[in-house]
Length: 359
Image (cartoon, rainbow, N blue to C red; front, side, top):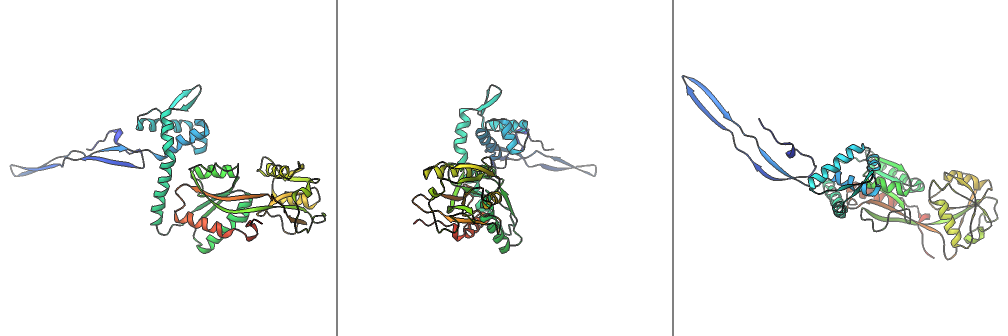
């Protein structure tokens, strides 16, 4: 019978075998009055493991550092708080250092945990590179390739890119989620999507965030949209200051950053916009503008329902509002063949009219 102590059972995906000792069983035959008796003496294989860090538990610790509470961490991982606490205790036991300490009714990370997290980004990036190397040798992968992005990125970039990928390889699985930049980066960090199309600027993660690798897809201008009967309709271009006396239509502030962006761009042009209407979709913006209730600023990727009587007026002048659109992936994962194909498809999907060329 072979029995191994609990401490020698596998608890991690990356064990390191450091010692193996085996006593081979002995067999002997003893003849007694014509009867053959076989005696076997067995001993079990003794294997000792030195445990390396469980990346799942390290990911939990990193999320706890970001979210602040065990409850929020559990919700993000779709686990119970007790399960998260158990895994973090196991991580602490395996590393033989305290990682958490009481802080009132909550917990806080110890200095040892801060040291560990200082190495976490490099460990995760290394693991992603490992997956990329393995994926390069894997034949017949069918996905899914998972995208996330904000509304106009889905309609103007992700949908065309995903459609092109499916046409090239009909068996390829593709999944798309529409959400703003901050949630998209959260999904990317959690491993729930492979590519996040995000806006550059204050809504994106800091450029020095080593969890992600970014590539610029485009820098697009904003246009002024007015009703078909507006004096500026059909104009070949105008400065933003020409709309200083207009009523403005924006996207609902809780929906995205459009309200804040319009205010900032108009302020830079020398006036504070008189905002009276807000909608939750670009179709709503188009309809309000078409019926003469105001004007708005829209990026080139945004479009309204076909046939809506709205005129796009290009903005001119020294400080034309623009926005950068980026593709973000987890650090180290860009070399995975499927993700590399997804990035290439996004670059190919950029419409020509969205490519900004400085005057």
